[in-house]
Image (tube, rainbow, N blue to C red):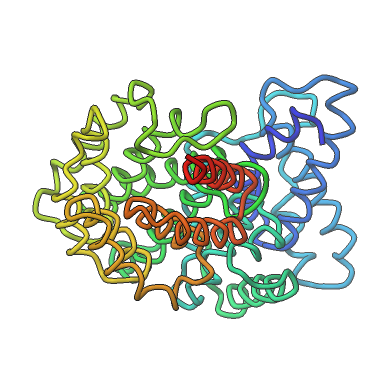
Length: 410
């Protein structure tokens, strides 16, 4: 795949598939023809030049592929024969400008697709997997790694999810206001997880996938526009903006820069201010995204690492539901206030549930190093290195191990 096609894939896959599903109503056909459109681009763009507006070009090719498929199948199904006239409106050729798509229509299609993926009839893991596949174009293998399952298992999960949508006749639309609450938790969770996958990839060479985190922020903005008075929808957008504000400082020369070592002048003050304004509109909200956003704001407000209000962060963590990961994060905050022994006391009981989580072992290593136990710190770092999912994180852990060895030799 050429660089231009790869960039278009990252930018346009979700928009293309969402528009095709809304147009033809066939989930599998839309994905197949979207893939064929990108395959056509691999051949045509190096030869003819990359179009100024790749999405209309891809849409025209994909719609033509859909029409061809429907024509071939028309003799096999009366339903498909009835569908064909609905798809016969004029579609520009790939070389012509325009595609009948406006930005508003694209946004609506993507929001409809998000709510379709997040219907309460689907289990939460299926909602997340289907969104990652359909909106973001992640492969089954990539999604399987994120869920710690095999690729065949993920393929079956995706097939079942699509079949459920078809069998239950789940409508491709944003639900009416009275049905929004039953889907909102799932929708917010999917957008949050989508952002996390972009900000801290679950596999591969690169830690950051700006296409995924950018897509999540765009969806969060759409949700906020749709439900401007919902505190958690507002808080989620604020949380994503606050986290993304630190992205430019997160890597240096392709290597991870831990939060205390980041150049805070690279943090985006505009995004922090925008998020703070959003949070000021929900002063009494203490849902999970509002609490996490206020924790993130404590970091973003700190001009220097030593200015961070760790006591406030530890207090905010008390308001979150105690999952193993949130408790680990609380242990970090407590250790900054009361010392590494207090952090270890909170973190070590989580070892059973977080044994396969590399950041658990990296955190234990930090506590042990601060206690002066280099042997225990080294063992924890080696465990983290074995489990780290990306090459970038493995390089960071190797550097930490090397630094620890240098200290031990002194």
